[in-house]
Length: 537
Image 1: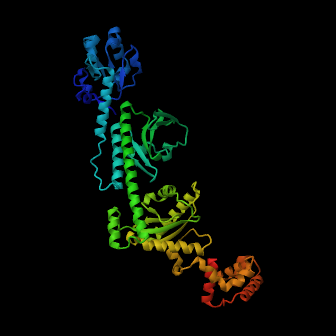
Image 2 (image 1 turned 45 degrees about the vertical axis):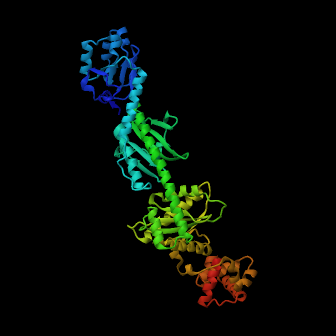
Image 3 (image 1 turned 90 degrees about the vertical axis):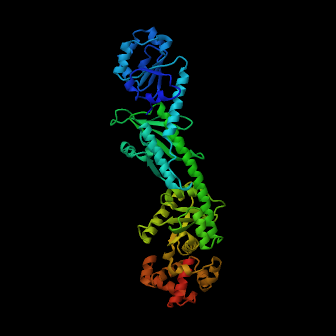
């Protein structure tokens, strides 16, 4: 959508331009400028232009006006502006009548302005008008990190773009995997396209670069369902040399005009500026949150009133309960790929507003807000599903990070983060010790085992009771049999079945084991200690 002729003539620059005919067409919109300087020049007009001329061409070719007005191209223009006093001096009545008949304004242009001045004045007018139309200061933000404010601002920019350009628009936020649409029209028109088709089409297409600097690209493809090639415009939102979002304007079977490109650029620059603000606010908020969690974990912040006050300063909701997870890399590295971890974390946990903080060189604290509409058990199940996705994502990422997780499945407030952290850490440590193929376990699943305080450097001391067995059993055949035997409730038949050996073989091995160790397997406490020791091995 361009500017109405009436609106143009009201501006100071065009105040001396006079309407000679076609007054009923002053509401026509101008979407470009065409200069008529050749007798057949009108053939290349596209429609909805303001055609400007010095008038010389009509003096040189007296029949040109009549020929032009009888051509269908004439009816498509929005108006004509001629320097009447330069060459023509006056306009014939039949010409004026034609302009009146088709409601096409005929405007007398003063001699002084050059074409460049007129074009520049129109461009400035379009720019200023567009800036006023895109004014969105009426949205009030409570804080710089108010996400709902940012969402509303994005929605208002997109709404303005569709309203002013008459083309629906969409913004896809990569980090949060979220799309914003100017209206339902976008989804209706593009219903047969996948979301990713807008930046990585899965079919044959052509591209046209509209602006190199901003990487504004038009995509088009031919489909029998459409009369003209289906098209859209894509602009990546790049912050710190990384694509944060894609801004899409859906042209469908039409194309934006010259003046719409001003609106397109201004709308995009507003979005770009907003994302820069979001990045700054997120960095400030994340840094404050990480310091907050670090102080709690390191017991620099202990008093609950101080924790509550600090949380409020950071604009945190201290009434939300979280499931706490400690993630630890199996192989400790000399440095943490924090950016890669956070990028993958946001892809999995971003939608539910989970938070991550780094507590050591190879471990991370994850806080997952619970959904109050479902049970704690279901919240834990959802947490495990997200952990599965996150583990697989960082494992397949170029960093090849392998993580284990301990989960404190008792929802707690932020002020109780230290207690939850210790529970999750205990689950992680015991899971690593007791389970061969462990990669996550909850605090509750460990039961009374969480009360055990096992020192790695003391395990060898505890093994004194089975030292003879370990020395004798170089092939670990007896240890495996003993472990299986205890796990089968000391049932010879079941043990033999699990080991794929004869039952007499099991009996002989158990007899051998009893000779090597001084432990009464019939005593429940002795048996429990032996089972735990074998698990720790």
